[in-house]
Length: 301
Image (tube, rainbow, N blue to C red; front, side):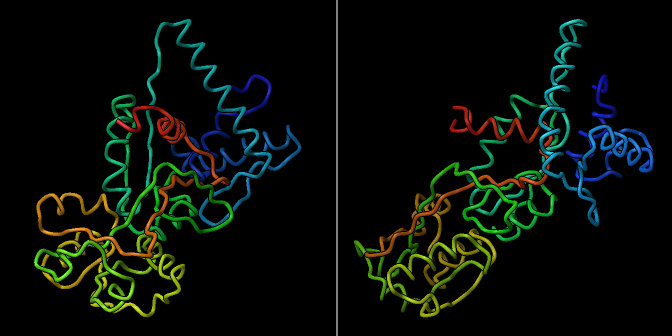
């Protein structure tokens, strides 16, 4: 990889790990040696490739351009080695993901199953939290990619829609609305509501829908606030109130007959699900391959 530009391999490791010390550990070098190699590469190109920051490094615009070519050189080198020796290398390494609760529990498992079938040697780690926490993790480089039901965060985040999602009013068996064909927004506002914590995309979706209907979210009658969709379903099933939740998350409870979804007239409860990455951080090959998976039929299997 270093025939004309020195230490491209070191550069790729530092770019994809976001840290000179992590690259040094992986390469079996000292951090000082890695710093010297990066400095020599920067000198040969007469440009800075990294912004040095507390806790790591971030690619400059020139660094992002070089990373694209360095990855191509690495892939071609691997292809050449496999063609000459007859020994092909399988994709390995780490893939770290963060997902908000509904994408993490209902969309991500089949995607990971399809990814594992193709790349069984990649070690995948997933953290499930709320959307705000997912965006912070992607922005800080703690994970490679995130799956969320909403957008936001800093200007370095790039969002790509991968699915649609619909929310629904969920009521427990025996509730006065069980046999209703629909309820009004006024009915919803007056009812005891069990809802997600601030930072949840589901909660923001409901609040935006109310605002579009001319109702302030503060008018809601909040009975309970919980940090997971499963806990809310348990609370609703126990008769503690009603809830507005992603329809796919309530599917099992609806089939079991414990809860029922009821339309709210005049309220549009739809949202998009996104894959999010940080444009300022290089993605390692496993993350690139995971993004590619989203364009294939396997992603919908």
